[in-house]
Length: 171
Image (cartoon, rainbow, N blue to C red; front, side, top):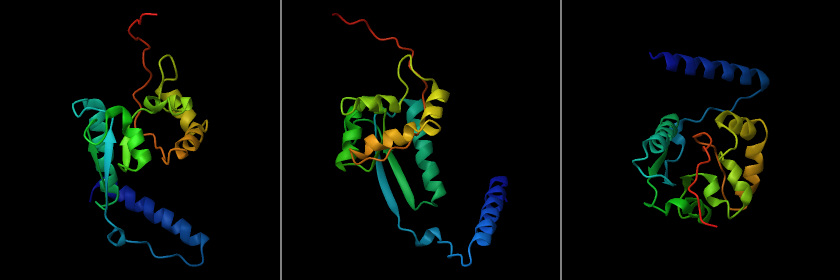
């Protein structure tokens, strides 16, 4: 038996015992076999050859499938396959595709606050961004904005802050 499986089943048993102590009657645990099979498509803003981001997305999708014993699968598509790379947010909002992986600042024209969903040039680093999202209630604030577009957002990766170097533009 694998070490991870031992830890998983021990944890499940401990949690189950704790829950049993709190309830008079415990409902039966549903088998994954009784759950429906769900297949989603994920539009991304990334080219398949942008290995750092796209491989991370593929890992996320494999993890979801593994955790649900294959009952919920997400297939990632490169930018442009299902929607233009900078319009995947719109595709999810319109219901054209089930989910997307993008930087929220690509949609800041819809709401300037969306720029804070990802790190900005000269802004927070990865640790500060996560602290703001999870401890500073930043994710709650973003969910209110996402709800205006029929979207629920989940952080899925953090590439850190941009260095702030942009080409000089003519005035």
